[in-house]
Image 1: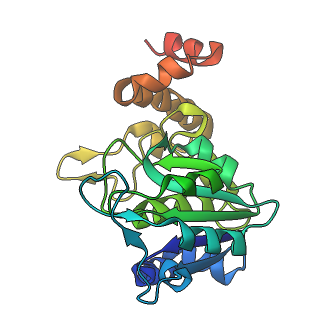
Image 2: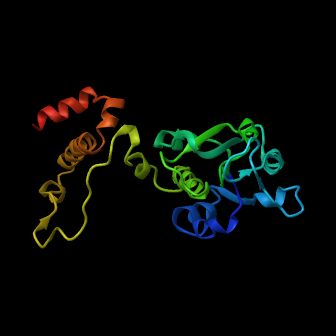
Length: 236
């Protein structure tokens, strides 16, 4: 996969590309992430990429020409262009899975009061990371990239991300590690029993209960299956 990130703050991504899973994925050549400075594509002699809005109003708007020049240079027939904006659909794990199957993503980081609306005519998806406003699209671009890259084949164990929270609209079961007891706080007995069948049943039960308690909206979205209802009935 190739991810091209368009920004006016290219240095923002230096640590991100040199850290953790993303760094390992790049080293394995599972992904190539390129950072592009939008200012280099400005046709203004001062490399200006913003201007006052037509019709008046506060703040500045990012201009259309630099985006047009860079997108048309990068885009291939199979590319998907994503504009990171609070006006987009809220990003979720299912979207991350879908996008991880694409060959080429172009992520556009906005700033100021937004972008010239003509940019949106070149965009395939508008994506938000939540119902709030950030200074710019750089942090959302990192979030999308991280969520997508870890799903690429060979980056992490497939078994690991298949059991992630939000897979199949369920949260992950609670997890524990050593020591077994610390100042009165103990690990559930079943997890140290060595009985793998009981451990699996416990984890299935706790995944359902955790989702019901913390994210009932996920249960409304994806109702309990017959198997899950049976698990709850057996453990009343």
